[in-house]
Amino acid sequence: MTAKFVSVEDDAGKVTRYARHDNGGGLIAPGAKVADSARIGPMTYIEHGAQVGAGCLIGHGSWIDRDAIIGDRTVIGDGVHVGRGTVIGYRVHIGSHSRIGSSVLIEHGVHLDTDSTVPDGSEVLAGVHSRLARAKRRPHRKAKGGLAA
Image (cartoon, rainbow, N blue to C red; front, side, top):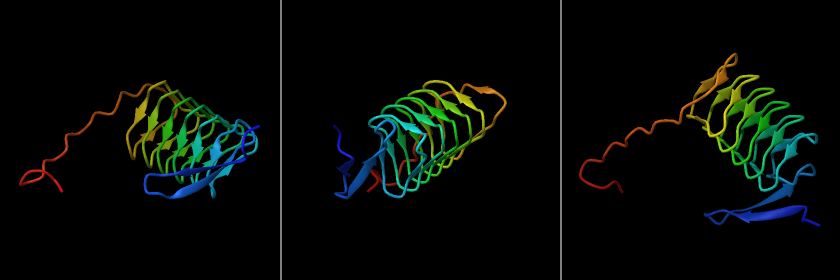
């Protein structure tokens, strides 16, 4: 039998008490709203303020960050990170090991392949089978006078 609650301490020493979801055993933070019919895989974290709709399937080891909204009947694979404040529509499919940035909008019915990367602030429009390339990293500006503090 597994524990109904799990306490996790972050790097700053703050302890959060997560509740295990009845359907799948994922970890739900206080203030998150998850439909009873959603299946949340083990070792998946749903953070404070996030909302997960009815009939969603979220795989093992995924992380749904604060204030993210996931529409009904959406499928999210294993090991996916959904950034803070992201909105995902209904019947979306996100392949395993994908990275969805913060403040992203993904319209209803979009399909993202495995290992997709969506940069912060992007919009993914419906109507096409989206094959997104990995986000290119912009070089950091060097601070004047040597190393940044």
